[in-house]
Every structure is written in C-alpha cells, then in structure tokens.
Image (cartoon, rainbow, N blue to C red; front, side, top):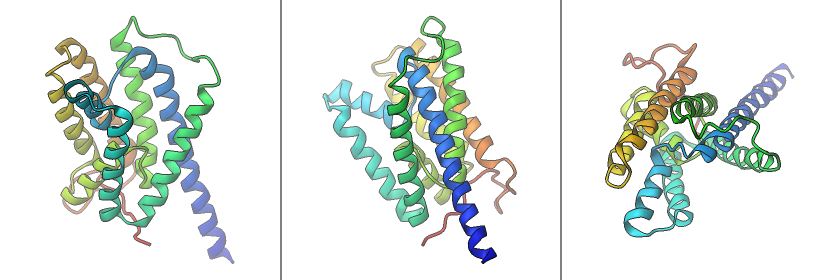
Length: 219
C-alpha cells in the first residue's frame, strides 16, 4: 500500500513540476518575447531562416522539425520522455491560451531590448529548466538538446548553446548583427540557467559533466 502511495505522490509531483515549468515558459513568451520581438535560436530561429531564404511557411516547417526532434529523442530517451514531453506540450498550449484571454501583465520592454533579453532568458531558463529536469521537453529545441546531452554526455547547457549559436550564426545572413547581439544575450543566459536548474542538487556524471541528461526510464 505504501509503495503505491509513494508512486502516486511521485507521479503527482512530476507532472506538477511539468505544469509549473510550462506555465512559467508560456507566461514569459507571451508577455516578453512576443511583444518585444526577442528571438531565440533553435527551431524557432531555423523556421524564420527557412522562411526568409526559401519562402517555407513556419506553420509547416516548425511542426515538421519539432516532430523530427521528438522522434529522435524518443529513440534515445524512451517512453517516459514521450509521456513527459506530451504533457509539457499540452500544458504549454493550455497556459498560452489562458494568458491570451488577458492583456499583458508585464510592462512593455520593446524600448529596452537589453532588459527584454535578460528578462526573457530568465523565464525561458527557469521554465524549460524545470521541465528538462523531470526529463520532458516543451518543444523540439529541448528534445534535441536532451538527445545530444544523452549521446555525447555533455552538460545540457552546452547542448542548448551549441544548437542556438549555430542557428544564430546562420541568421546573420539576413538579420543585423545588432539584433543578433540581443538574441545572443538571451540564448547564453537561458542556456546557463537551464543547465543550473536541471543540474542543481544532482551528483556529477561519471565523466565529470555536471548536469547532464536526466535518467529516463524506457517503459
């Protein structure tokens, strides 16, 4: 009986953290990113790049890339990842729809892009960090970073930074360096914060990489 009770409490705690992280992330994107045009790297940045150079609609490329990243991560991280990722994606969509029913709750930081970049990074880093700590993902970016971390045994922060910086470097082909600078601030801070949230309180992995990919069950 106590075993079942313990498993139930662990399940409630796990999905509670996923809900909290998804809510924080969606709140930041709605109140900061979408109002100030602060951008990230990863899948979002790649969809904009493909739209600019090839005319591919983000409505097509974004879900395709997300699905590809999810399938890749599922292959390496197992069924638990799939469950947590689905829960996080649904929670993110639900929270975002909720925020849309209200006017923005934070001041408009459009005139202060540096502050917007830092504030946006805090919401992304904390929200995504909580979900990733559990072993889930809110989007294709998170799934890809988790997969790279699992395979390469790298700290999760390094994996996020690698994918984000790659996309931002390619984006210099059509976005001014001054705009990319603020995006660089955002992705650097958010990657570091994700790594800190995901790795805090965990023992370093055997190869010495602190905050690596979480242990993910396969059933």
